[in-house]
Image (cartoon, rainbow, N blue to C red; front, side):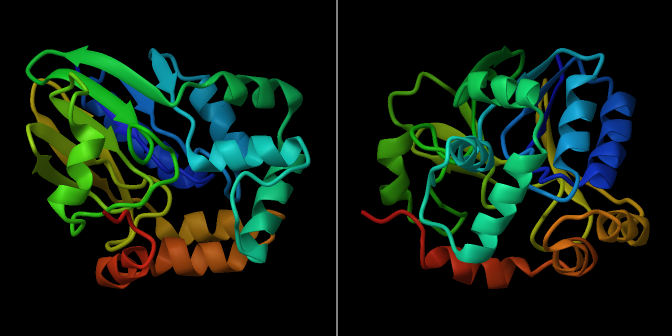
Length: 249
């Protein structure tokens, strides 16, 4: 069995379409969507595309879904800056009620037995919480309590939009990266599992994607197109940002 892990799409439909082309070419049997399908410029269209996939597809709630669902209830899930709150509320207003019901039913984790890898646990940020930050630079002693006793040989996560593959204690911890908003090289990052594990990067037409995004009514369309599609922040920059909010002992 071959599994594609697609994380942090953030309503970037062009990026998703390019990755799905490669998923088909790779002969994937199953897809795990690891959260944060939304918010983003084309959230509804992106979610619709995923729901229409012919392959078996499982979904996990990310902090984006949790925040949008909270906004639909008139509350804030997290303490967010005002520009992010605007995005969350705008996305909630676009979301059809049937989509909201589906999001509310997504689990926080998905376990899968994958030949060649063993028991693989998919989560959004960490196995205990969809909004905790850690990176490849987070000390192992901070991470050990999160990954001990899981009965999983591999844990796949996302959330921080930067790929890595490392060992924490006896567990292989892999960040699938971001399909729609990767930090570092422009394009799309995702993960292919079974029988081995491969970090994948997909190039696509960035200029066309930026134009599609600019043509939406997304509140920060220009910033998304420029800052997160055409010229994404470097990994070094974002590692500094996350170091101020990452897990501590």
